[in-house]
Length: 190
Image (cartoon, rainbow, N blue to C red):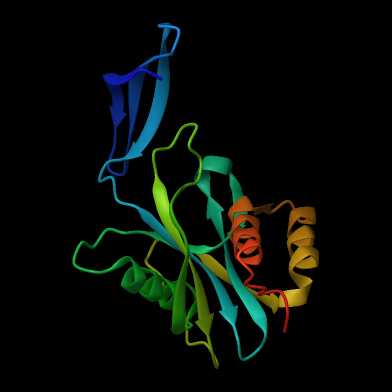
């Protein structure tokens, strides 16, 4: 692509905006492209959580209005507090959403796009290890998050059972696990 310039912003809300970009291809053809951005351009952090005491994975399930379904996904949050590191933000979010305290955090994927065909959002994904028992969730008023904990060797069966219940499963879960396996980190073993 030779050029990319914003030609209009038809919508801007509290959290997101839509921009129409003019793209010029290598053959000098110009065409419009819709881009969704966060109004604050803050990155997102997410984490695959493993309870090493129980040899389980911990995921979350919540209703997501854009797809009109409940979705099984990684713990995640927008980095909306500049005074905190991304690691501090994901630790706080793990505690808030699951009740677990992260003992160890390891960066797995950095500045990775999740849906680059339309959303400009980049994020960091972590692998977090938790131990012992969980406390109560400390959710915000508008959050309704179900904690899912299951044995690691049951990953595929568990996620398939969710799909049979018409609950969507984020492909990001598989992306993170594949990335770790490709790097020689076999988290599926005991």
